[in-house]
Image (cartoon, rainbow, N blue to C red; front, side, top):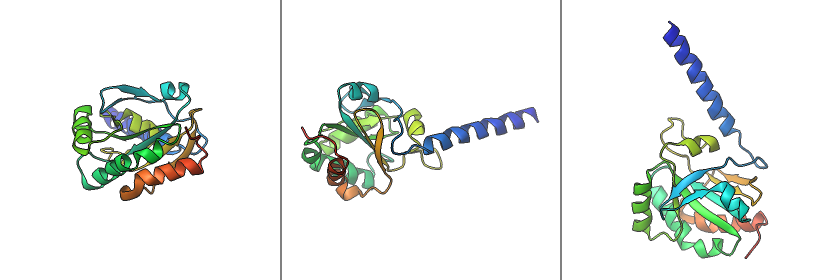
Length: 176
């Protein structure tokens, strides 16, 4: 009986933590993150913000799947448009770093794909799917001050790179 109650309380606390993460909205301070990129480097939001950079993190569910391949390829194909802005951009998933490295290599990606294999960052951002097994396809636009400028929950995989570049202009992110 005590075990059942303890499990129920634990579940409620976990659901509360997820609900808090789901509440991220425009204007909120983005949770700091530390993730390894497909290039082997470790990236943290706080360090990127210290450099005065806006940051885009485009979460996707799984490497080597159809929609994710289209989305990440779109980022590669339209990277020049995004690089016109003072921004650092990434795609990110819950896949292990080795898998995302292989995925990036298979695509010829010219930007880092971030890995969050323990889902700790995905939980902070509220992007885990209902099963808690993969990230939802959401994109976060974060200003140089660390505040969330926009959240896109209706990503079009084929045009996402161009869409991000357009959104950066709409948000008033400075050009280089």
